[in-house]
Length: 473
Image 1 (tube, rainbow, N blue to C red):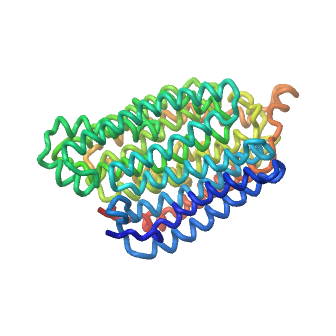
Image 2 (cartoon, rainbow, N blue to C red; image 1 turned 30 degrees about the vertical axis):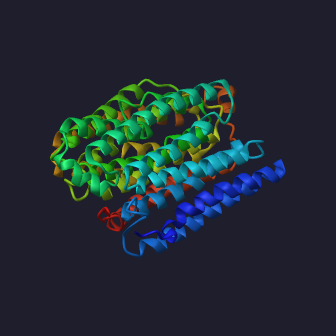
Image 3 (spheres, rainbow, N blue to C red; image 1 turned 90 degrees about the vertical axis):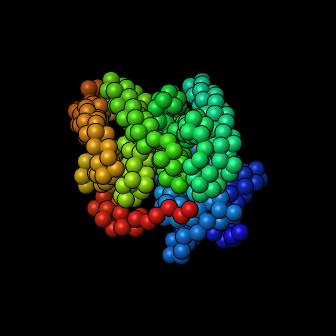
């Protein structure tokens, strides 16, 4: 049994930083809570260095085979550890000097840790533990602002998550009863001779929990309410970081633990992907709230990402395509929310009239991110969509790729409904006042995210080569 704690340095750093940050915040005066943010950023930087060093070594499974250290885990570590400082930067203008600033940072660190654990989990029980770690801190973070809308959003999120968690644990018990094991390789072997009905019920129940974390249909109903009811920095975190780990967790579960010959799960995931992208797009068409529009956009983006899970093990390019798309979605989505956080008074699409004239740099960053979410070259999301669509065709789901292309074209409509007012002149002085910046850090985050979206798109070939590796069993 490989019980090497050094293999978990990035995860341990996040855990220690969360504990140390909580203790530090309890003793520091309110005016010096920013030191906890500095600790969080330093931890992410150290975790990135540790990840790069670990990626040069061989793949391995540790602690009884329950946790896999491979290309997918390394990629999620990097994406999460880059996304976390960007999310912190988005929140500085909101949380800076707030009496609950430490709590915000600590909850973010714990959610980031949960996302990474979800991605590396090679055991049903550890996957459920990762689900809880990626969920419970975000329930509290959703209600962090303590406004009426935030409390309502937190309650909806918590109740939905509690139900999804119970269902997922039930599914874990059913799969254990059918296979007599919880480790993914052992489950794969044992389920070959198990009753197909039991496997089907257990898998659907486990997927219910994981798909709740991704925000995919039919577990998507909480996403728009939580996104619209919380401050923009919180909405950015909830719609980005947990989805990174949950989607890789779905891919690993299906590719390693569930034999396709026992249950036709590829078709199930293809249908869920089609439903998510279509429902998300249709619901976004006539939204006027920018945060609610981004919430429905998240659902549609998850639909495209689920296409890779539908062809897990059937198309050789599915895993690198998923990882590239996740990296692109993370920075692009955070960039769009950074612009929203910079103008907290601009709640509707029409509030952005005159942005290009008043703040041309932020207007450019917003346009890059919105066109990036559409999947326009040279952004990295374009590369992610192209590779995922190709993988879907190679995996036998050409119809799903055609539907995804149609949805991509349709999504241009509601993203343009936001972009067009940006370049129109403001109608009066009141509308100009709505675009009063909140501070500097959200602006920096927007520029950094937009720049990363373009840079990763330009260097996409090298990125795909780095992410091309098998899952460790």
